[in-house]
Image (tube, rainbow, N blue to C red; front, side, top):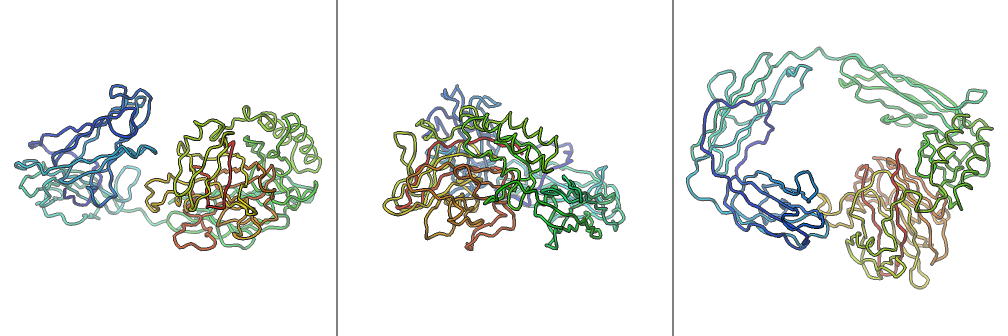
Length: 620
């Protein structure tokens, strides 16, 4: 099939005419309970228009509700790649499992398959002949108009018309006419830049001499507006709890805003304490004690930038107890999976309110946690770190939280439990694998090669992932493993063909490694980006079950080991993988808001066990 420049048809009206239509063939695939083969599938077809039917319903033998797809391969040069089809069906979908799509087939062979993980044996070939017979079908021709438009839909200053045509026997020519003038050959997009009303006629002729019906589209071009030369107006406000001297206790929050009455605000930028300007996306919380200066500016859509504005403020600390090894820098205070919305202020040199709440600890029961929250918030209220209303909010949210309650009450969903059925939902990719033990735990196999056991059932957004892991390395060695989060689907990734490397390059590995030598990234590290040394990893003796929690909200990562925060990381787009790896996309390639989960197996001596994997969604 020969196709000219592809464009979207908008505003087109056919002129009166008639053309013979080629008889359209119908090709039907069916599926049922089998995950190894389609129930029925065509083997041959003729070139030209075709309706593809895919039915996966009770009528075709599906009694389990299992989902299947009919997907045409487009990336294998051995097969035709001009038909992009991905029909997903199950007996309970909106169409009752029966879906159709109209396509145009060309001579050659198409490969089709089911894209559901574990259904890879459902595949086959469709051989398409040249059809034969006389070509009496005219080409299909479309048109689109592009350019900047005003509120009335008129194009500002200029409009560009793009035509496209397709025909199973090949397109000979495409022609156009402007405002009733004679038709001219179309070779490239046509731009009109004089104000006025326009009607564009267009048609196409194929190699057999069939000419399409004449079609036309209409639009208006108006003069462009006067250029915008006025910059936006930017403002800044600082908020937070203040002491008698005006300093902000624990933290100050800076909120920026801008207005522009002409072209509109394109971006707001800020520079804190002389650092390079960064793009403003949300209120900025500053918790570092001392005096601060924040410069800000705004740029409109026309490129005009305001003169920088400046605010200065001071952050004071509130001393409440011993220092914290890792400062919890989440912007708001969390109580388990409940976001209180109360600003998370720094209350001493290295401790924030979240550090002092200690919701991640292994509390014996809920009342004990409640008593702790009441005590610590009273202390913070006494020192002026929180208001009376904020203390009430924290206590109320602690009461509704599930901290200190049993797993059955916490809202965590089991992903790997004592049930063999839960293990069957995971999929191994790459080398090696895991063996399920009689107690429901799983242990990596002592074989060479890097691999991953991933949970393909669904992707997760913001979450708290909890699990237990144990270092079972043989002899005196220590195991190297990790937990992968926020990576895309590992199959048919456009940039990486190795499934296990999709997680490595496009997700984050939260490291498990208590070795005294070797890799510098120890337990709790965000591998390649944020290093935790052995002293901060909370090392336990080999053979000990460790509780591990990974919390991800937006691009903010918190890692807890045995109830202690051992690392925090903010996934910035400009972060660079270290040590350098030529094909690693860095932080920019790991900005997705959702992703899958996986457990790493690393090699022969890196034997590690996992159990009790569970997850709870978090609402920012």
